[in-house]
Image (tube, rainbow, N blue to C red; front, side):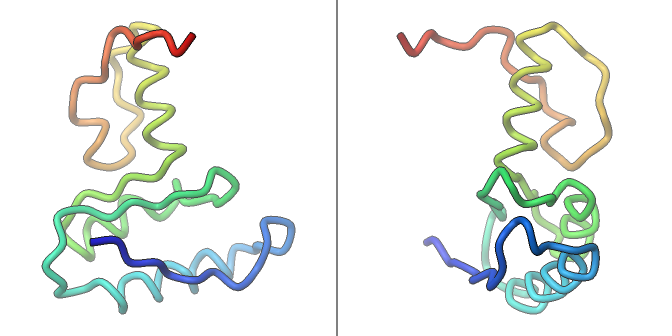
Length: 101
């Protein structure tokens, strides 16, 4: 099941206060729901600073599109050190990625 949370502002308008408000909305919306993980889509949204907090408060893995891309790129480059963001970085990244072309 997919559930959308509407974010009523554009990237150019996002402030630190907006990120905090978004965090509080997500926790309120998803706490105590029967979900396996939370995906945050949108590469222009600065979600990295709230990933660990969301995982702690919701007790589920939280993966953003930026976090997944970074995890994959580091794996392809052979970087083994964790950058310490979220559950995703506790898993081994792929070492190769199939060509799209």
